Length: 302
Image (cartoon, rainbow, N blue to C red; front, top):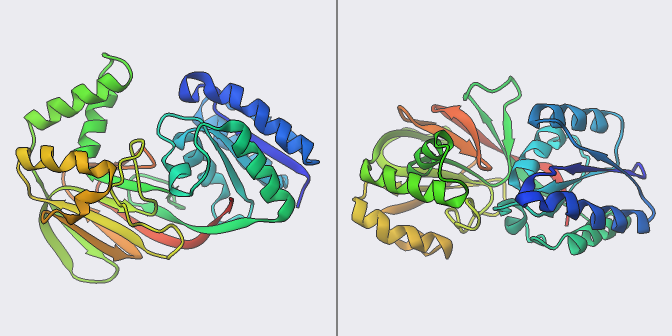
């Protein structure tokens, strides 16, 4: 392993927390005997291009400093390469770190953990999802936590179109507006190579990890190294039922509701008109999409 470690930093994550969090992470790595260089792009495509260059040149590991968006970018460069990923989670949601049992908003501790894991050769091989069919490149798009579609993605769509209000209030307002126009969507779902399931659903979430949206445990029982997705289907329910079920997502107890079904599969194809797919909180494009669970696609410092 190369002694040079790459810090992959989003200086704007968590209202600027990542820029400060990079310092204790770098210090922990240097104290452990590693040399450190930082990769900071002008925008997401530039940052990804720079990281891919670092991986090609032989970096010993990549430490993503930021939120789930930064981890998502890192996955595009690291999946299948064998180069390990560490995470200093200081973003808004941090669902990848939560799902993997890593420190959240504790940059010094996260940096020490990554340094110790590198020194001891301690890595965990985890699965990743690979999505195709949403206008992506030939290799598909990798994700670590949840691919979502339906009501939740419609809320994201609306929130992304809104300029005001700012922050979390924007998505609260977007949710209220989507509820006013709420209706279930006709889906066609194919699990592995089985028959097509035609159903009315409020949302369908394909989980490699357990949560999205900053701790909403939509796929609460998902295990990121079992070679299978947990696919949560919230069925045809009324606005009133949705409002009752939604708060239970934070504890994962929504899975017991009769309108909720969980499937497990290594491959899934989702088809529905007018629905955008999101993965790790990032927009992928319109359905249909197919997702494959790729065992051991990432080596994680843990």
